[in-house]
Length: 247
Image (cartoon, rainbow, N blue to C red; front, side, top):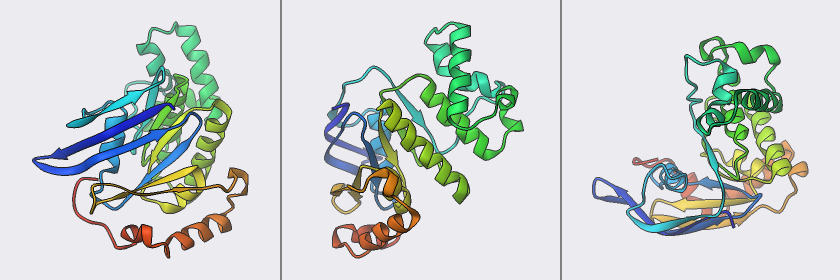
């Protein structure tokens, strides 16, 4: 087990968002966190990633380091792509040559060309910036990566490419991942397990393992999975429309 959230509770301005929530994440596992608006998806990820402290409960982390990929790339505009990718290594004191080699390797892993490394964020397309953000997360060789709806703003073709990239990297390097998404097709494509939150119960409504091997998750298979979920009463809340509140 890489990560465990034990009986977590949290809220904002006196309004509870999560109550008595427990979940765990195993080494090498990709768990997708889905739920209607207001169910606390991003709040849970931020607690798990130590970005905010829960009001109750505890988080147990059994790993050396983690990384976060946000919905926005959050690249530093005054740094080149190479320096942005290497930023975490620089902060940890990695020597210049080693971090540049790591940045170049991770850039190749995510499909950036060598000439892209000299570009500043303003010179890069949205897809290139998001690739650089994923490369930055991979560069520190994390044991766990937290993804907060990272591919929402990219087009369908690039989204599929980036999803495949995450799956391949997780299989190759055996990191665990908690992946927040509102896209059930994305969850069906990349996850070993789907954790479904409920805005009504302020916790986990159900969990759904996905046994289909990654290599067999064709577009048709993903469509059929999501279509079956649409008839599952345990997931009815996901198909009732969004609710107002904290994401």
